[in-house]
Image (cartoon, one colour):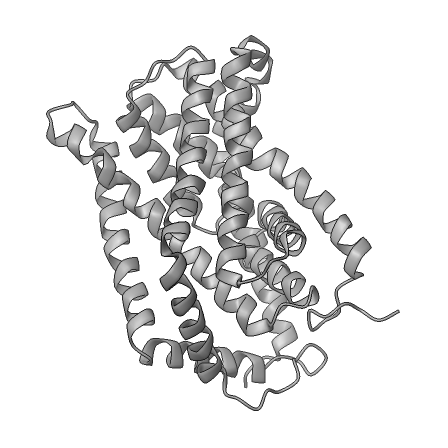
Length: 345
């Protein structure tokens, strides 16, 4: 007998909490070590620190601009508030990636953006960003092939990125050039929707989900055909500025690392953070980034304090900003209803 959806949802939340708890328990010593280095933030070079924070803000602006582009909307307010609030949920709840994406989707729908358009835009934006992360090790290959000594851990990180990049590109090309992939995804989504509890199920649409996804794919493809260079620049800006923020924090800490080796450490950490083990990669990023920076010949003390400064700009401050964005969204559109539309008073 199949358990009811509400019970399956509760079980999933319990599993997510347990997994996050175990992961945080294992990673706690490194996390505490990084957080305990906060007094050393006072000794960082101010201008490098400010430059790193400014780069992180610009990185988030690029991410929101990319989402606005693929959503084909002119509303900055809806995109920014939904994007930042969804990011805050991802950073605070166990298994928050799925919950954060759901909140972002519902907020976009509540602002008046078509639901399939919102789902398609979020998917395209995610594929672009993740593909770019996996592609980063490629830019370090000239240094590695040129004879620079690289630790085995960083080499394996580059290999992982290469494999992931090939797989993601293959999936993206298939989704853009053939109908079978999206029709399969559409049938799966339709099955999930049909099995939702009646109190949260969306009203049934006359057109099957697969066909709606195909129509949205064609619209996005046609639009990006004219604006592909904007998408490339925004993806590069999103990742590049985030990476420069890390470089700036290392400079602020007095380290003078080899950028290519730091790039391998950064890309490996970003890939590991995609695993939904802890909220926003909390603990995973601190442990992996500080450890990999040490493998990249960064002094241990500098690696730890630079990791903390980087996480303040990429995790803690955006999480707080997301809460503010959600309040601003509710003041304009009201509380979200179960279907993503604003709740009626």
